[in-house]
Length: 68
Image 1 (cartoon, one colour):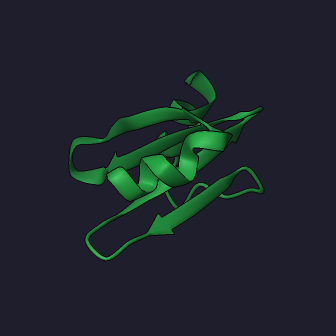
Image 2 (cartoon, one colour):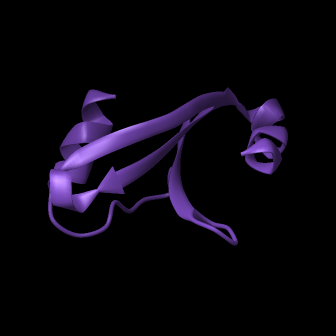
């Protein structure tokens, strides 16, 4: 979590193989791969905050996104 906070604090987009932007019909958020788990988060630039939406096992990720 500390690495995520440091990376997001820097200006620009968080990049790398472990981060992916998920875009849906209503909103978009980012996914960070950490072993067998995925950290779903959103960056609120105006407040300089990282909102963690969920920490999900990769096997449950599709169901989590559908139910969101």
